[in-house]
Amino acid sequence: MASTTSPSLSLSSSSTLVDGKTTRQSAAAASSQCVTLPTLPPPPAVQSRAARTTAYCRKIARNVVAMATSTGEVATATEASSADMATTELPSELLQKIQEAWDKVDDKYAVSSLGVAAVLLLWSSTGVISAIDRLPLIPGVLELVGISYTGWFAYKNLVFKPDREVLISKIKDLYKEIIGSS
Image 1 (cartoon, helix red, strand yellow):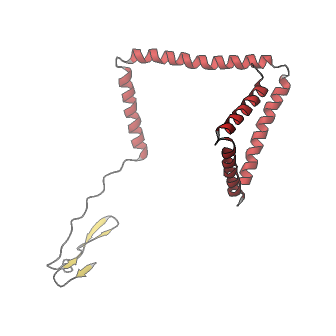
Image 2: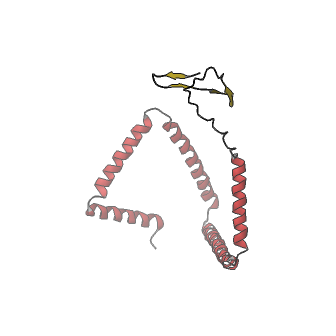
Image 3: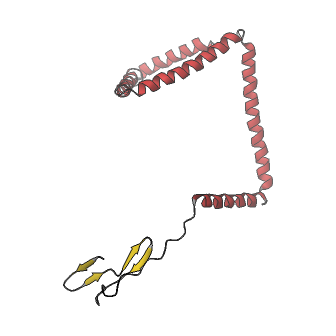
């Protein structure tokens, strides 16, 4: 099929690959100076992803079984029981504190209404932000405004020590006003 002629060497292909099978050309087409390359062996069978995953899972299962039957089982059981105790204490303490705070509330209807309103406000604000983000030029402009304001705020309140102290005192005063003095 393909033949390259040069003054001193003539190369000719004596086999053609058709549909993954090698077919030989006639011997007349090959000259006495023909150089042929051996055909490649077929590619090795490739395992499917499912077979590899199954083999890997079996290997992990064997390792887990081997670790469980070793002498380290007692130490890990003790550590696991202490970890379980610590994780069960945290949620129970948290739930107890939440229940105490809920019992202190006088107007439960108003607090639960505010909670539902906050969730609805958060949900609607994500919708509005998503709609604004889809507009062509607005997100870039808003990002530039945000970066500019952040730079201005940092320069005005964070660069110099007296300005930082004033900002910290304002934040502490606001915190005391919201939480109450304790």
